Length: 188
Image (tube, rainbow, N blue to C red; front, side, top):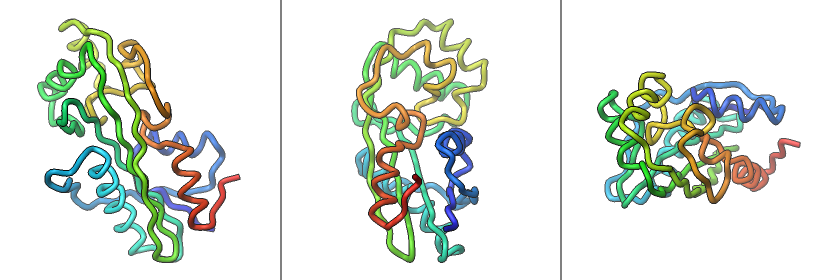
């Protein structure tokens, strides 16, 4: 079986490597166009489906995994920050409150697509302006939804999570395993 991860995310790659999956990486390159008015879960599914579909079209005999993560707070979706000012805005918005992380996962095999969004609640402690500036100076928030990476420095800000740890990093393993089973594939 040829398993393809349709993502350039180093975190998704690390998660699959950690469980010993045999896969290759072929990132989707198309534009990310979230559907207007969609919820966080719907947006994550649509974007993961677009990524998986793009790569599966070029590799129809492979099993393709697409994933996309979005952060939602007060009904506002936060993707990757455009620049440092946008990252600071996002971190201020998340400071001292809870928000939701959605990762949409799509698996395509033999033209059949199955998708699901996983939801995890994350609670941030209150951040100071100095902490926000210092965190942005690390460069870590610039390629992550919501402008933070749980597995890095931002772990210092997170009081607790309710849900799948791997979801917050970008690839919920239990969800992925269930979707793969639906198309007849096991990673064990």
